[in-house]
Amino acid sequence: MSERGEDSNGAILNRGQLPAKIDTTKPSIARVYDWFLGGKDNFAIDRQVGEAALKISPGAQQSGQQNRAFLQRVVCYMAAEAGIRQFIDIGSGLPTQGNVHQVAQEVDPAARVVYVDNDPMVLVHGRALLTTDDSTTVIQADARDPRSILENDQVKEFIDFSEPVGLLMLSILHHLHDHDDPAGVAATLRAPLVSGSFVAISHFCNPGEVHPAASQQATRVEKLFNENLGTGRWRTMDEIMEYFGDLELVEPGLVPLPEWRAEPSFFVRNALLYHTYYGGLARKP
Image (cartoon, rainbow, N blue to C red):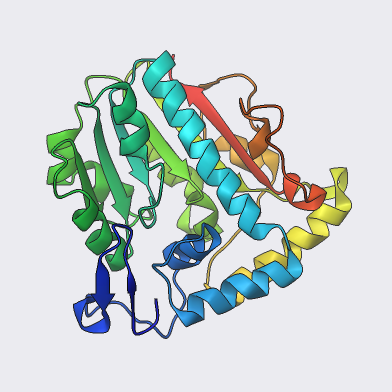
């Protein structure tokens, strides 16, 4: 959007309708991702960052789409195969096609979903999208303060922690700096989950010496993200694995996004990016 644009429901939004907290002169993680996904809920500054990323990684938009498809596959698995009926999506981003509640409620219309994001624009669009859905809500909270999420009144209203939960932390932990203690954040969010719960994670990955060209590209994009968004860490496989704690990984484990239970024809054309975005799903025994 510039002066006006369409939200995810096709409704026209003018600048005067945007929350006062939204600074359209600074890029937003949620809005850059929205642009990567072909959405309209972004501003010129967000598109500039996205276009700069494409100059370094021409397949970056496709990687964003791969992450969205991964989300849909893990939610479908949890809902249809594992019987999960309540979900928490941390760092949910702006609503687009194939949201968590849409995938889960195809399996069971009563499935409950809580979206969590710290971007005020996500709150506005999310609430507009969910006006007719009593089983889904969106809250504004910061992943760096996981206890505030678990203690939120709406979370307590929608999520019964005595029953299995599907917790999604997709493309959020790599936006936490090392000093934000992402491992501690993940551990706090995992702590109340009972046996039979699941945790899904996707994360930027630096493959190091295993794929040196991809590693060099990851370092360049990490620099771009930190200079423009202030966040973005391409971590090692071992670091990402730590976020699952002692949960048991579902086959095929922590793998490049298109390798997680996708159709054989579903692949990333850019071989470098293939090795810089990983995802996995794990079950609490």
